[in-house]
Length: 255
Image (tube, rainbow, N blue to C red; front, side, top):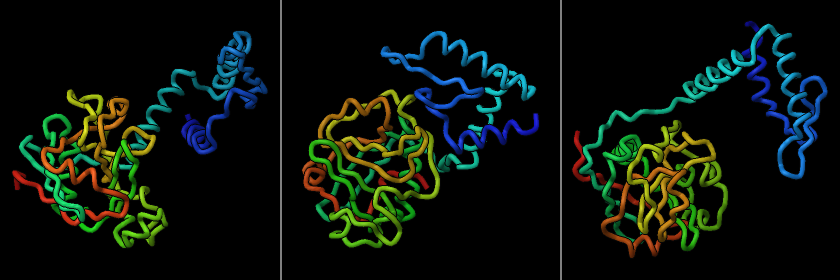
């Protein structure tokens, strides 16, 4: 029905109002009890009010949910989840030359083909050359791959300053890829694991990656692992914010 998609978009833009004190359709207010759930009488009143609201719009609540799902999928398509053309064989090894030394990583092309394919493509085109590691958390991760660091000095990155392209940690390749932690049978964050950073949105990874500084099992269910360090753990231990990714070479990559 006309106007429903627009109504959905407006609602997405304004944000859903919280039940706690938030005005709901028809003036019903959500009263959150001490147990964290809305009182039963208010839940019933809310449901009836929502059903009346959609009846007035000439659409069922079920149909509205279907439209919401369609609009969400359409938004994702507009954003453009990228599928790499490169198809990993599982033999690829990434050789990262940094200002602290060289790191060799066995890429998990069979477990996370989208992430490995994306990483191989970006590396082969020189995307990572000259970028700086921008985030260091002792005992947790060292993170890099943000293009906003390209035109910044190592000192400015280390100080957490904003660069000419934006704040380090907020940049990407201009697209997102689909998360694979649910489908990766070996999605385990060990010491020296290579994984992809993302925002709070599940399918928002692009170019930023991190190395684990020790096992991080609580990341296993939310972030995609796509490689494991086989040489250079000592180098990873030396890396700090501001250190440079000089070049990434992919060994055993197909043409």
